[in-house]
Length: 373
Image (cartoon, rainbow, N blue to C red; front, side, top):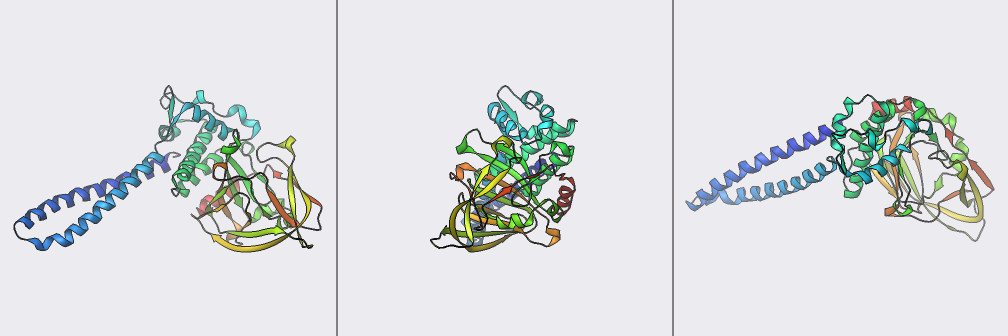
């Protein structure tokens, strides 16, 4: 069940490629036939057929490139050292209380692990044989995140419905207390999926973001709206799983005259610096700012957008469909990072505590999103 999405798409691609290859050989035989007739004086057939032959030849070459690319994406072989680091980056996104239940490298079966590599395709194909829910959950997430990473690196569009199925199952099979889920300053539910931060220049953080009207009871809506315009320290990309995301971009600069806006520094409570659990304070830097909206963009299911490191923006959701929306969100330092992130807020406020609402059970809203997707 869990491995169906990956194996199905691989089988479909192979089937399409094999059908095109059959057509290629049929046309090649016909080309030989027409070439023979041409030597006998029947030149009428040549011009239109050669055009079709060249077109099909080019199409086959393109499909071959696509086939090779997708086969690589869905045929993961990782060296064990990289896999162990990858596994740690997945495991640390689970609740601290279940740390001892999560799989280690030695827990992966010998038929998918060699002396120096691990085969993720075989892992996907054999997941149904495993009864341990923590092993299944972690395996589903690492397959999903690995696919997202490779699509990102190769500039390919990820199969979001398939990736969602893997992530959805990885959450749904767990007890709620095993899932880290919290609501932060922007008012959406955030579930961390993967975090690598051992090298700042390679920082890589994937999260599931969820908006839903049922979550508003946990949110200070005024504080959210007052401090909604912000920057990120890292390049960010968001893929829309469902709903309608509205992204607004802003031009912000210092003002010599008093304005309604000031820049705020974000100070984190480092004593609570667990993933998605730290609290923060927005402190007025006493610098008036001019803030001008420069664009409003709307993105639907299957779309994606990018926020460059240091750029000001705010994201919200369309109120339709009960305000339900979900995205996969990624911070990725190799594509851009800056020293600090900032928030724009009302100039008449000195500071504001931005605390997280933790331990939100995501199961019901995950179920509703799964029905939409």
